[in-house]
Amino acid sequence: MAPMSTSWKKRLISQSDLMTLHEQLKEKDKKIVFTAGSWDLIHAGQCRYLEKAKAHGDVLVVGVSSNDAIRRVKGPNKPILDEKIRAEMLTFLRSVDFVTVLPEPSCTPTLGLLKPDIYITVKEDWTDNYKQSKEYKTVTKYGGDVIVVDRQSTAISTTKIIQRAIGGHLGAVFKDFMDLRKDPLKEK
Image 1 (cartoon, rainbow, N blue to C red):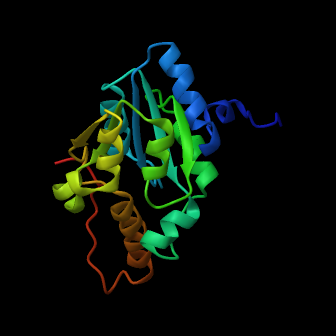
Image 2 (image 1 turned 180 degrees about the horizontal axis):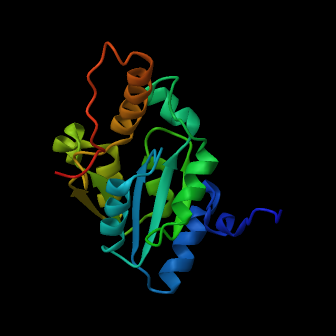
């Protein structure tokens, strides 16, 4: 069996190299776009979102929340996949140019180092007041723009995928007690 390719690691940028990446891309007059998330069990909605983010510039850098950062926000049962696996998966998507692992739940330190021209975030409950966020203040302070993008899938989410998988398993175990939908998750 051939050894696994490690070429994706060339696109994995450490936090300490983000300033250098910024300088190199600016020398080439590239417009930098940044977005961040957990990227656990990547699905079509997330892929659409990344394509939309990439359309705002020349180079898309994606922040991947570390295992520890996710646990601090979402509890001990998340993430499902390790940060290195999540980072590697993203590098296989055509819209993603670089990936960096975020040590903190907030991507503010990363924004301060990378200084992207555009920071893209997904519309959530908290983004109604996004102009009050540290992220917004960090990006606008150096002259960058913040764009809030709608979710690209309302019917599919990592949580719904997990619930469906568990529900299907429980349905098999408790088939006499449950009435499960038989249709796969799809866009409405």
